[in-house]
Amino acid sequence: MKNSSIGSQIIHVHGLTILANLLISTSFTVGHTIAYAFEPGVLMLIRFAMAALIMGIFVQLKYGISWPGWHGLFRYTIVGLMPVGFFWCQFESLRYTSALNTSTLFTTVPAISAVIAALFIGERLGWHRLLALAIGMIGALWVVFRGDPDRFISFDLNYGDVLFLIGCLCFGTYGVLVKNLHRGEPTAIMTFWVLVVATVSFLFIAAKDLGSTNWAGADISVYGWLFYLALVTTVISFFLFQYATRDIGPIRVQAYSYFMPGLVILTEWIIGYGFPTAMTLPGIALVLITSYFIQSGTTQTKA
Image (cartoon, rainbow, N blue to C red):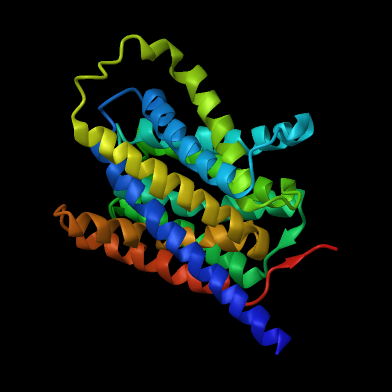
C-alpha cells in the first residue's frame, strides 16, 4: 500500500513537470513577439518584479515573510543568479534567432545537468540514458541547422544560438543548485527569494537603460504579455520545477525539456505561424523519443 502511495506521488510529480514545461514552452513564442519592445534587461526587470510581487503576496498570506538570515540569502542568491543569466540570454538571443531554435537548444539542458550533477552531487544515469542524452542533442542540433547536413557538419550557429547555449548552461546549473541548496523550507519561500534576487540583479543590469526607455510608447499588449510571463512562465513554472526537483532530481526534471520543440511548434501552429520545414521533423522526433529513455528506470545517487 505504501509503495502504491509513493508511486502515485511520483506520477503526480512527473505530471507537474510536464505541465511546467508546457507553460514555459509558451515563453519562447511570447518572448520572440515582444523581444524588441524594450532592452532585454528592462523586459526581465518588469517580468521578475511582477513575479516577485505576486509570489510575495502568496507567501505573506500563507507563511508570512521573514528575513532568511545571511546564510539563507547567500543560498538564494547563488540559485537566483542562474535564472538571471538564462532569461537575459533568452530574450537577447530571440532578437537574432527563432523561437524554435531556442526551444530546441533548450534540450541541451539535461546533458548539462547530467554532467554538473555527476560532478557535484553524485547523481548518476545508466549508460543507456547517457546515450539517449547524446542522441537527443543530435536531434536538437538537426532542428537548429534546419536539417541541412552541410550546416550540421560545419556547426553553423548564429550569434543568438551561441548566446542561448550560454543561457542553457546557466539553467542546467540552476536545477542542480536547487537540489543541493534546498534546506527543507517550503518551495514557495525558496521561489520567492529566488525571484527577489533575480529582480534586484535585473535592476542593476537594466539601470543604464531605464531613463531612455519609452514606457508610454510600448503597446499595451507588451505589458499584458509581460504579466503573463511573470505569472504563468515564471511564478508557476519556477514553483513546479523546484517542487519536482526535490523529489525526482534535476536530471529527470530537465529531461522533460525534450518536449519543448514539439510544444513550441504546437503553440506557433495554434497562433498561426504554421509548421517548420519537413527536413526538421526527424530531429524533432529524436528529441521527443529521447525523453522516454531518460525517464525510464531509476536515477541513482551516491550515498
